[in-house]
Length: 255
Ligand SMILES: C[S@@+](CC[C@H](N)C(=O)[O-])C[C@H]1O[C@@H](n2cnc3c(N)ncnc32)[C@H](O)[C@@H]1O
Image (cartoon, rainbow, N blue to C red; front, side, top):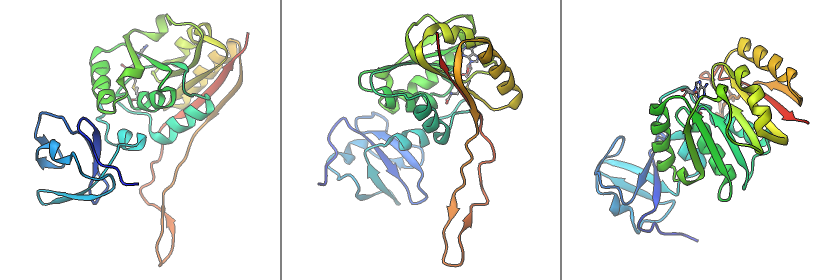
């Protein structure tokens, strides 16, 4: 069934190099980076999946998927990429209706993935020490239309966690080991902890701290993802492989 875009909807425009731009059809501005000058209301009535021309450029038009939202996000800090967010969601068994806490929010990349997983009945609570990061992440969440599932707090997680009975706590700060005991207290029994760390030295300190608390199923993994270039002349991995992002440490609370 072909569906038409109605007034008030948010859409993604994808160009021939697969660059993605999310546009709200009610936006007041008429200047869009990567698109040019046009009135967003002209998108109303177009069909999802069709190719449209704006100025001299062609775009496919879709309802934004979670990957579109992640790919069009504006970055301010190092973000957690989809390959790692996907792994976090499954390993921490995050699903609709849960309450999940993360620190810090950064640009809100992981937050978008978490909010999608807990919606429509759950909530993500996001701590960050910096107001500018919180404001930036909220803009990204509003653009992704997920802000109603996220509560932000300007708060240092190493000083304590206000919430109790959390289903999961995800830590992406430089010193996760300083937040492990607070995470244990805030988690419900069986709840999951995840620390995302770019450095092995951080992983070691985090794991030593996790081992001092009551957690089981402690494991650290690295996801290595290689895109394959398919050709009639031969198929091989892409030369532009993303070398390293971060290590994921998981643990589960016991009492
Ligand atoms: C690498 S960024 C997080 C990126 C985020 N996970 C994403 O995917 O977009 C780290 C963030 O942690 C925040 N931060 C650092 N120490 C913190 C602490 N003790 N408590 C809360 N937030 C903290 C920083 O301000 C920064 O925004």
